[in-house]
Image (tube, rainbow, N blue to C red; front, side):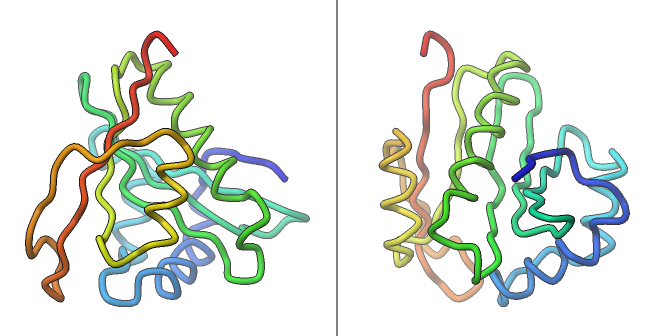
Length: 149
């Protein structure tokens, strides 16, 4: 398994993962292409590649001291095999290297699996955003300290 920066050639695979993992609010291919090309300030895209196939991706935003994990997605057939953990570790290292003191994220309060994953990784709830998602779900805002780890 290799974790690497995404390239323009990865856009179709990432868009397909987005559509499966986030059917209500997937990032469109054009937006993904812009992120990969560097047209979105501070936004980066990493992919997990196995045997030449993209099996997961992570989208991050690091602007000044604010680092946010926008999303992690893993192909259904590769879930629960450590792919998300490898992507998260790469995101954490990237944000720390850019001087961010913490990594933030939002996750649906109804997504028990993701909440457990992030809690195991050391994230703690710091806030809630009612009706944050299009369908009215509340977002739980979580933070992970990066400096002094």
